[in-house]
Length: 290
Image (cartoon, rainbow, N blue to C red; front, side, top):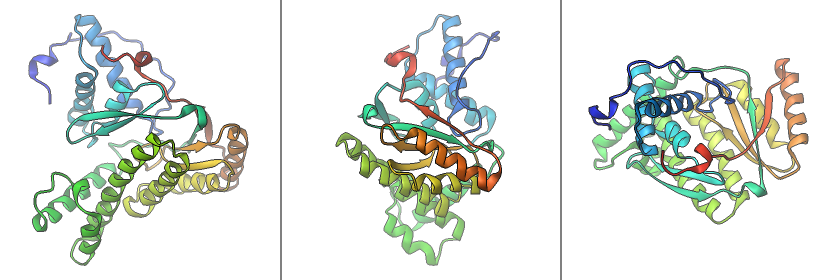
């Protein structure tokens, strides 16, 4: 993805790191750190890179050096975010679009279970391996598809009789989730927040039932969120196996939402989750190039 000469950085840096992202909550804190570190190294080296090159280097740091079977989504979100926009990222072609996000019409609540997760040490890599196996098996019978997400959900459903359960379940999630993402971009562009919220609920249910990446604490938060008037939808904020969910709320409902989820969580787990209101921001105020 990057030429070797692109990696001609200083051999050592003394850095002070500060941030306000929760760590281990599925908010891509590691991607934000690698992107920030790359920008610091570029500044010292007197180099100017495009945001996508910074994101690709951050991806290599986690994927090749740290050993996390991650994709490019997290570093690209850190490097290319714009205020008031949703990033519609096409990972295979490495291209993206910006979709209007009507932040003035909704509030976003982040709800952290307090259960930390590490993608490198969780079942995340196992899920990635199962997805690769599902793609291999499907491609033997239906060649010509460039990725698992490109396979037809109907073909995946029909594969239940011959595909092992683990890869089959992951394929059921991935193929349908890809279509939900495409639909979400259309709904946001059309200012259909109710429809977008329904996709959030569906996404969480798919992560729970098909990808099997949720835990009881996450399930409890989502079920409590369903009971709150004005909550349009909720889903995982990251890869699951701990971490947090985010919820889309009608303006003015955050306080009641927070109390309801805190009460339900306290009853089940004898502690409170951390719930905060967040906003759609951007990298360096939305500057297009570094």
